[in-house]
Length: 112
Image 1: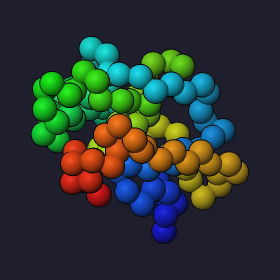
Image 2 (image 1 turned 135 degrees about the vertical axis):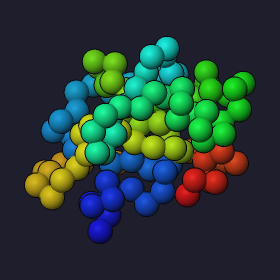
Image 3 (image 1 turned 180 degrees about the horizontal axis):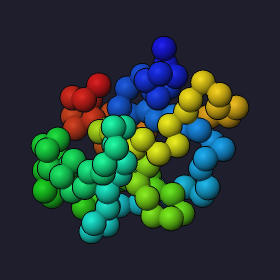
């Protein structure tokens, strides 16, 4: 089901449990940024962008969605964090679609 897949149909979409979220911000990656993996642990955003083949010249400007504590929730076009993942008991969900600028584009669509 969509809920078991985090509610998103593509990597340019993300769904979050609204009750878990505080304020959220779209920004560029910062040194040391990481996000939570589904099976535990964390991954560096720099490594994610590099492993996905995003050109070095685009990495510093790639958007990330972060919360008010600075934790990265989603790297549009690539991957979302396990934080605030919706579950069957979620009462309200926040759905976000990344479009414009580089979405959809050659870097995002190759992951759909």
